[in-house]
Image (tube, rainbow, N blue to C red; front, side, top):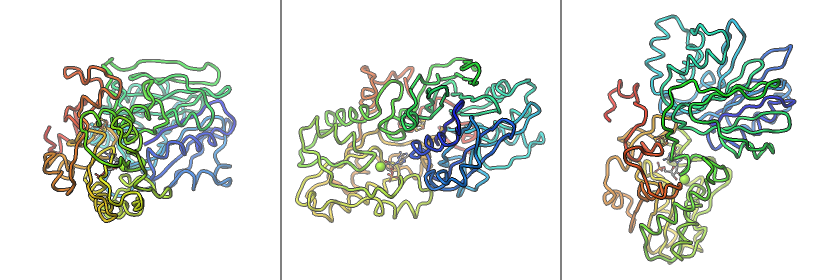
Length: 466
Ligand code: 5GP
Ligand code: SF4
Ligand code: MG
């Protein structure tokens, strides 16, 4: 998901709509905005579909006035079942004795089922099936006198990944979990302050990047006093999601001081060194494989070409939640550039293999177009474990790499070769010259290594085997 918030700018919700549009790659199912206008109170709108189709309408935006607003774009992750209902669309709102508050959450709470059970037994009435709603109910039970402190109380009971943008009538609040699994940055525009999942959300409104919200930090921002920073959790060594660098974030964003594009290009360089092959053409599987393909081509000296063309009017295939749509999705989204591919030995570079659906379809299309050989090079290690922290990887039985060796996958995909970048190669590409520190890994890489930095409590209760 993507989260965004603004304080201190006239018609803040317009800026939030723009920010959410820049974060649309983080979630395409639905979006919502909550805002506050002094004297009028809170307003909100939640809609299915793209930001640009909803939050550009004057009739809607007129109903979202005021200098303080937050928003969310949704992509449902492993916790949720079935299609999103409007009641699951964030931001969520709660009314407390000291006033209202709204929250927008990116990440996944790993003890949400346990918390929900306990809260329901004690009388909470849940409105949605979302893990994030726990936070509101935990806040309602806190005895603290102000909302930020209630939020601190609530979040100390929550396990897992959270980057949260929240608001009261006068405060904009940003929080990251102690490991800092998901990103969150702080920006400045005129007299206003901005919070965004990624820096590309600041760029779109011309805001200046100030700094990241630190892992374990809560910032409480008011128009009058600016930023109040606190650290409500027991400090831990950060474990940022390495897959944000590989796939999830936009290539024009800066994560941890590093250009995402440059990191991806560098993964391609590592791949070319680790897994060279004789061929005539390096083709990205667009768009997610493009920077790595550029790096692979540059390092190998093999010409780069756009052998696969992407229809710009389709979203991200993986994020469409049903199997059937995903299957069709590949063809709706990608087509082969026959004139370029015919007769060539082609290296296809993609960011990841999850179920293997994309790779299988693309290989067929490329062979149909007359390619002589097809070699897959993947810009992440084999995805063998599900993510419980906010990326929607499927259960282990649907993960290709969880059930097959590299050799078996090569045969299953019927390609001439298939190679993944090593975990150390990936770490080098994100700037860790020595590779992965096996004692204290610098990132979360659980989907590749199976080492989960936060115990997935709910999943273990459901029988998940570590
Ligand atoms: P597959 O077809 O193997 O299931 O999925 C692989 C494709 O899904 C890749 O092209 C990758 O860009 C894309 N993808 C989109 N979202 C995700 C995600 O959340 N996780 C992973 N691992 N891949 C994703
Ligand atoms: Fe990121 Fe993978 Fe960790 Fe999930 S399991 S937070 S996708 S690195
Ligand atoms: Mg892709």
